[in-house]
Image (cartoon, rainbow, N blue to C red; front, side):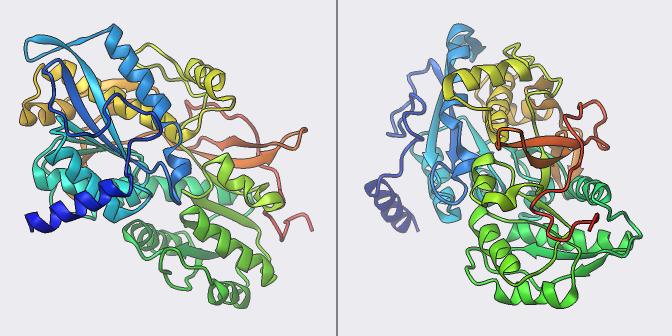
Length: 431
């Protein structure tokens, strides 16, 4: 097994698996720590289907590492900075596993960050569990991660549950005219991976409870290109709306098939694939009106206990450096690193069990909200992150913006607009 692992790692290095472009000072060369730095491992989808989620990794790493350089933390009796070693997962689960093992076996990291959708969080967290390395997971709904292992001894998750996702999407359907009890037919669009299965099973249950009719064409293999059968099923059943979560290429192929088949849709709510402007822009005019979850926005009322930066300010910093609004996943990249630093400040040591215990005792506010790991789902300790409902709307200049139109789960988050019918609504209620 060790021989096979060595071959895989050599092959991976040979094809240029590397840190996100110019990212951290840690190049992943396996060099031993000089004793003055804390090593944090980070597997990021810098390239591949989930690259949009991985955007901003380099920027977030630089912000936190620069902060700790100016404000060293006392660990193991001496002042230390942090070295965040980032490898590209290429949005591939097998590569996630290989890079997580490399971080532990060669780079000797002190803590792992598992981030950017269940597709990448789950394999990284599983490696951390297997090797006994403290792991901060974020940007993965709690349920898929909790369902991926029988027990968790090293991992904490910071995100929302799928019950909260369902309730958020239900609120968006209501705004579009499809309230519980309306008898609306909901076409389901889920891949047959761990993430899709967790969503699918919960939605089937909750839809029935709320009087909706689920139209389920079956879960599809991720990276499917032909969705003709799905589109035909939706057309035959005369669905009212579509709900699901997909990687961007899958949703692009499925949505185009649905439109080409002439399916009339009154409402679309999607997770994962419709969070980022770059992803929805690829849909052209059809993007206008699509609804999705909002994890973070510049208008949110949060301020980092670590750095003192608030949501408005960090967005201004990102815009100055990158020329556009900070993507939601970048906020969670920043928050994950905040939590890592807070953990070592509180632990005062790099001893792994003490570090793990310190994660569980965190009680602080990050740029994406407050953290308190007092909840558990199937043995996985977690802290809920805020969740609101948003809609992609074009402004007077023709640019798409994600507008918060529902805050029923978290009323303290300000709304930034109201529901409007868009081009994604091909069967408009006003017709």
